[in-house]
Image (cartoon, rainbow, N blue to C red):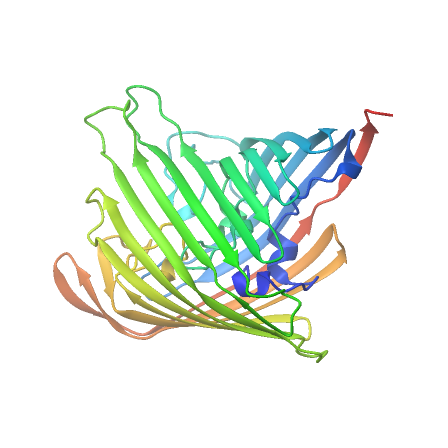
Length: 401
């Protein structure tokens, strides 16, 4: 577990692991009008994955990413930010030239460089009191509040910043995030396809999250489109995939100092291949049940997942009927049990240490491989990580003074 999912994201806990390590405050305040600032975003990480069961190969991620930017708020409701995102894995001197997301999907196109670097540019417009428009480098990753079958939280370490357009609405009874992440642009005659993801994450709330018993109803949708009209017609054709999830959760805020809050959530998930026939399964579904609690300074979660032909677009491969280790093997009617624990300590709001550990038990199941039925033995996978986030801002000048 790197990130606790949507249930605990709605809990106002200052030390909650995911919020401290991977989420960003996107507020644009009138008080900062005229401010020119140097912003330093950085995450150092060491994460080890000991994966078994054929869904994903094990690997270790030792490194950091660094994102220095300059920001200017020329008007009370407009904020501009520009800089660079640098990614370094210790011991790696050769980096593939591609859009970075899951390391299992990287393709080496012959590029050689000491670090991976991409530009960052963001325009934030506070269009109304609770409504914001973001252009350029949007607030992605865990900020979308997606469940694990839809989003692999490890991408907070390995993925490039998301770029496109984003609409954000935050009110007492409703949160809304809609975005387009453009991942591959094409020119006429390109062999590759354009690729982009359209996402929607909404959270209607029956009452205030500070209520003793808080009820909410998350709805989440992802569309992945690969295609284009100006690329080489002899190349790969159009493919459109959809993942969707909806359900309900109940959060109990207690007056107990040892267990200040606990939550349960049930979500149904859907997969569909809307266009193209590149994947061997056209549709499927899954069921996710979560029990979560804040115990002392620990974030604890127990999860159960049932999968019937559900294929994940950007989720953890353990939640998919087709993993990243062998794309020709289809796991049929599989189950898993997942236990996670996380701890974070804030030296200050800008300097935070986090640790996490998790285990996944996958009972034996049937699989289809190259048209043949096979049996998959039970397996247990482990992961653990340590992280340090740094996010100080330095006021250089107020241009209005």
